[in-house]
View 1 (cartoon, rainbow, N blue to C red):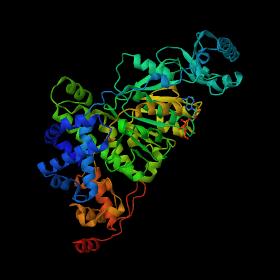
View 2 (view 1 turned 90 degrees about the vertical axis):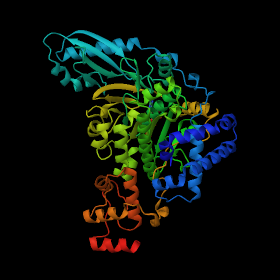
View 3 (view 1 turned 180 degrees about the horizontal axis):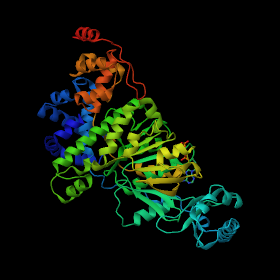
View 4 (view 1 turned 45 degrees about the horizontal axis):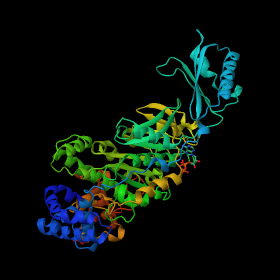
Length: 577
Ligand SMILES: Nc1ncnc2c1ncn2[C@@H]1O[C@H](COP(=O)(O)OP(=O)(O)OP(=O)(O)O)[C@@H](O)[C@H]1O
């Protein structure tokens, strides 16, 4: 339905203009009924003017045409389309003072301990026959990096092979050796600090807010080993995979990412789509649904916790992406940044506020992948391949970075990858393509790989109490009357009980014949053979299931086909008429 609104922007814009005076007055009101009245009037006018039910009918096969839900959704969408184009002019960004300040004592470096470590290291190296020319130390939050220049004639391999011996002699587990440090010609020996420093997110956000870098979506991730801040632009990554065994810092990391964006962006510029099958990690953000979250028109909560709804949501996001491509084409621009720039410099209405950045966050991706397999992988791969241009970025987090969860297909499209400590070298390689994450120290110690270049970072820390304060400071203000509504997909709001075979898709019979012929209930086969979109193919597969032609979805495997011969399926199709 929303796709239809998008496809007819000119007519809808005309109608919106008609209602503008009313909306301006209602914008200042907290009374939702005013918005609803506006919405109803607009919905009626839209229906009258361009015979909406017919157009919508062709989109969703008439299935919801005459249901009350349909009308509600229509009103909601009409309201939302208009409301989201209004600006929350009085919106106040969260204050940095809501975040904890780094205690003064923590900033001091223990110089005596540093000197002792240095001289112990030199003695240890000498005792193994390695003489050095010079040694310099940089104290990071988690480890201290000693950069040494070996005496002439010492082979690098010799030092690398001494890793375990040095570790034993210094009684310091978790040593790592970088030989040589790229671009420096020195050898790095990194020794974990006895007392680690927590990196408080506040200092990073202060740095970021005062910086002139002008990143579009800055995320304050933490500090490097040399104590410099690590702030990345999500639009450049442009998608992130986050992995780590339980309790190593993933949730804190995801909170740090979300909060750093909340500090930088206005609600009209950014929306999160949150999927959390664990049901506990992202719930803290529910109060800012009407400011910063996006949801399905039929969804009650903006935070998706159910696998079926998650698939619908991903489908809706694909549709949003397709719609955005059309908008960009209409405006003759190549990407969302140019679109925004053009909208700002042009008096014509490019519906700028319809195009906030969208960041999809999936907490515990493995749950979703194991339950729904390719139904999840396919839309995600599409989004990862082409979402960036239209401002859609993905952050996927998992405790189980195995190759059946992080498939090669997905990995190929996620150039930014973060790993907290994992339980095996294999997991480390699955996520980062290199070993190393298995020896990290926990508590937010992480490796980030961007385009295969790996760096060690101490992740910024933010407590749940700080997240709550930031959320509260936003939620106490005037917001939009609803979350940002994603386009309604063909399948949204469906479940087995509501699939009505009276409204079979036009392609139903052909698809039934295909699955029987191939004896494989595969949605991607249907997509390929008939050149259908993901949502449509998925919806037909659901109808085939409801008709008893194929079995239920089971992970990423094709569904079982219950009809074995062409004769059987033809006589069944006849009986449906
Ligand atoms: N960046 C950090 N700095 C300091 N301590 C941290 C950091 N990140 C995490 N911790 C510590 O580790 C604990 C667990 O972190 P977190 O909840 O993020 O783990 P997780 O990987 O999400 O675990 P799970 O997968 O079980 O939810 C935190 O409560 C905190 O004490």
